Image 1 (cartoon, protein in one colour):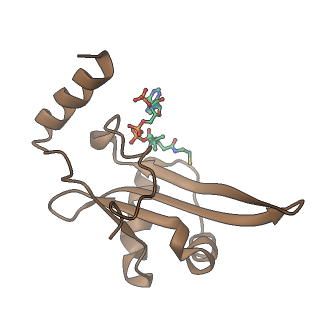
Image 2: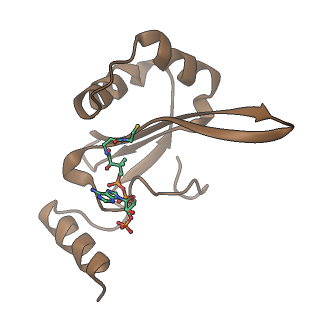
Length: 118
Ligand SMILES: CC(C)(COP(=O)(O)OP(=O)(O)OC[C@H]1O[C@@H](n2cnc3c(N)ncnc32)[C@H](O)[C@@H]1OP(=O)(O)O)[C@@H](O)C(=O)NCCC(=O)NCCS
């Protein structure tokens, strides 16, 4: 087993998680904004105003993804935007945070795949 694989195994055991226990969802709307802000404020030192959150979330809701543990608690969030630059689409990650207890499990790297996003 590789170091990475054994690290993930140790962490998932410690958290009592099974594979696929983390649920990924697209942003549903304003109802989720307070918990998103709470997680980001807890993990990032830079303060953002509500206008910054709404700028991203209202313009590109389809580029915001949430990760929840089996109890439904928010444990990861990515907020992004896209723009056209020199005729090319350019993606930009505004904020990405994973709860400290859930890091190094691959949540931050999870790719958008239809079967993962509900
Ligand atoms: C950055 C962050 C979102 C990564 O989330 P994560 O779910 O732990 O990331 P993953 O498990 O998907 O790991 C992805 C890769 O990121 C790198 N990485 C993640 N955490 C790392 C750490 N503590 N040290 C070094 N590399 C790290 C590794 O390359 C890792 O791949 P590997 O595990 O195969 O080596 C998380 O560490 C975090 O929330 N940090 C604080 C917030 C922050 O700095 N956000 C970015 C600025 S907005």
